[in-house]
Image (cartoon, rainbow over all chains, first blue to last red):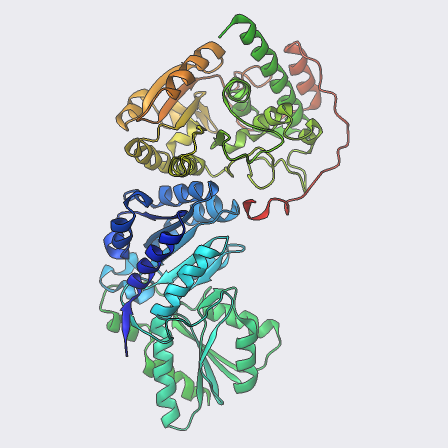
Length: 310
Length: 295
């Protein structure tokens, strides 16, 4: 399967957008080499601002830039984008109704060798409480490029959560995406995985394949947009299959699992329901595979959970 | 500055001070100390230096003000009301439910407010972003920003200071309202800021220090700042917290005070001013929904 680095999908799209829109600007806090926006700096050196290791100021400057009509994309590791500058992003950008696109890379176990200090399992929980914020976790390079474009073209604050590393394409390059719309990658009869982000969507697809061989028809919904959440697609899957398993590279508290549980409960949907995710633990150091296994995020974990529900 | 102009500005400042005392007094509680110490500065900026249009608050080539010490909002509201950005009657709606004049500045609620502030240090970074955005857009406006001395404890202020110095944001003129007091006491006892001039110079700023209640001195400093071509400016204003409000000036606990309308009227009388004529009950006009998305 063809793949591309997610950060390259992000940065290449920024360069393309910037060629048509002079208002696109990029901010970095000394992580340009990690987030991949060096290509933007090379093409538009006057429109990339490296503020140094000063994330609070980065978000403040981005807010000010947007007040003058610029469209700032500010990127840093997701741990800093959320817990370090939550107040700045909350007030200067969101509460002020400005137009800041905050990009958090290396979410959850993808932080791997940077370890527990750099491993955000709580960023989505924090961000979901910000009124009006659009929260996107693309699942492949095509959706990453598309949502970067959507963020640039839509007034309002966005939080884009993406791993830097290569991810396989799940969609053709010209696939249409929309904030608030999930994609049904695989239809199921017996249960449905509701998954967020490239790691968990691919793990859900692998789990569904295994289950299919054993006669269990499992569907996979690629959530993409955590907020607004595609209630119609998820509720329909719950009604059709009677079994929902959420899968996220994040704490089960506050993120996707919580959002779907709230949705099901408030709509009075009776179905079996389980959450795959980190269960009230901090991050730690290790390979991504080691960590995914430790926290129970692998395809066999999903298969096991599914079978227990049947 | 001519003596005549100084006299005129003093008269405007007296009116702004009066309106602000009356505004907070009508509510009965507020940040009177830090509101009083910036009266002369805001008077001078809005009546001598800033290009603004009350009929078109978001005019593209206006000068901007980010009041990073957002709790001094009431003084800015009085200043803007006097300029005609909105009716003076609004001042009596300060902090009441549905008001367009909240305790801390909000760019979406109040005509003439350029940035939402209140969490200290944040407005200062935003001012850098605005200055940068205007420079990128080749707009020849000046961005003014005001931080408090207590606010200068915030790490974000110094992140922004480094950024602005290194970015050569010459279209930015910042002021520190150095009234020597913060909520818990004197700044020298909480976190000593001195030598404040040297700190800003070390960050690559053009630094001046003047009396923040002296129009002529501030005017000269602003004119010198405007001549800068490669450095942002910091004008440190030596001010008095609670200045000109007889029951607040000189009190250590004047950061946020409760006081009665009688006290307010007494302070206004002591200034030799007339009590502002406003209706006792004021209808709130507009709502938070207006100005959504910053448009």
